[in-house]
Image (cartoon, rainbow, N blue to C red; front, side):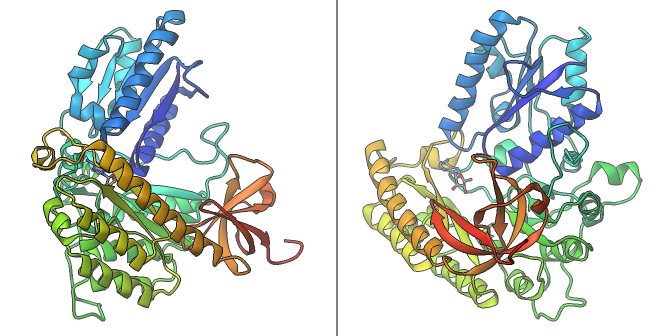
Amino acid sequence: MPSVYIKTYGCQMNERDSEAVASQLVAKGYTLAASEHVADVVLLNTCSVRDNAEQKAINKMENIAGDIRKHRPNVVLGFLGCMAQSRGQDLIDRLPDVDLVIGTQKFHRTADYLDDIFAGRSTKIVDTAAEQGSEGTIREHLLNGSTKDKAKAVTAFVSIMQGCNQYCTFCIVPYTRGEERSRSIADIVAECRQLVAHGVKEITLLGQIVTSYGRRRSNSRESKVEGREPEIPQPSTLGSRLLTAKSPFVQLIEAVHEIEGLERIRFTSPHPKGYGDDLVEAYARLPKLVESAHLPVQSGSDRVLKLMHRGYTRERFLEIIRKLRGARPGMGITSDIIVGFPGETESDFGETLSLCCEVEFDNAYLFKYSPRKDTPAAAMPDQIPETVIEERHARLLETINDIGKRKYDAFVGRQTQILVEGPSKKNSARMTGRTRCNKIVLFDGAERHRGQLMDVKITRTGSFTLYGDPAVVGF
Ligand code: 5AD
């Protein structure tokens, strides 16, 4: 059977989609290649969030087409995911070497389309159509035993929903990923149980806007097959000690929390407006929900937040942070920030800087604003010149790095629990794990530590990394 190499650009959702496609291909008999140079099929799973992510994938495909195809003319080339969705046939018009363009609701069709190409039934395939129930098709995992080089997985990502209805004015995601569609709690829990049965200890619930989980009804494929309505939870006050209703997302976390053998639950990406008191309270109540939150703030200026259509103010964001830290001291908080949104003045940018100092994020990912096709912000007046964006980006990066360094340095001398994930990618003599607050810890360990929850004493720090020693001698 042909071998396949999948290269992934962008977010954890894309990583997860690639894993599911790889697993579906393996189930059909395809093998996974170690690099594009030896593969019979090269698939690029793409990101559209900023122009440079798109350009990277296009350049890569150009290089592959020019180089690999010259020596091996029968290699099949394809684009998957967000850019495939937004550009469709244009990609083949521009890069005629490309055989396959598969959008975000069609990942599960990849194996069939490759079969068609290898059997000579089709030559060029573009499928970017919407598909009802596609939110339930990202479910297969590459677990231990399913491939040669994939060792026992300790952590896993589980897709709980697809799409986003927030329509932030800068963001292409609602157009590439479509409307919000959620899987049922029963379906998600069944997948999580299976993972835990295979030795997974930590699960990250994934979606473009996980805090909106279950707020819109959708028809999942598996439910239709079984001839019943999908079980999408409705907010209910029954059984809640709160005055406010428990959101479907919190109900989902509770259901996953009950799985025996599961040690840790994370999720990404949430929206700050989804941090109601029910979710804050869940942190205080559910010990497996680790004290870590990735809360994309995007800007510290109320004026810019409004232009972005974010749906919260600076003060409301700060209140959420206070409440979270009240519920769980030591909460690790990271964020995404856009620099140079149209109309961002020096004073708006100053508000972002001051917010970062006030919150003291453990880390924040900075994004230079990139106009995206058909988004409202792309047509807004006062687009910021690149030189200004560069200069603000450098200043903010310095602030974020300074704060991060202080926060990481504060761990030195402390004992903390980590879940050991496996050997470090950079230095296989070292093992790597994560604290509950999502900091990477490297230590001199061995394969036998994989999958263990262990206490380490932090001895020093690197750049957004901690180094530790096992706290129990002889561990
Ligand atoms: N330009 C720059 N950054 C963007 N992001 C989303 N859209 C854009 C854009 N047009 C960033 C946001 C989001 C992260 C995943 O990507 O900060 O949280």
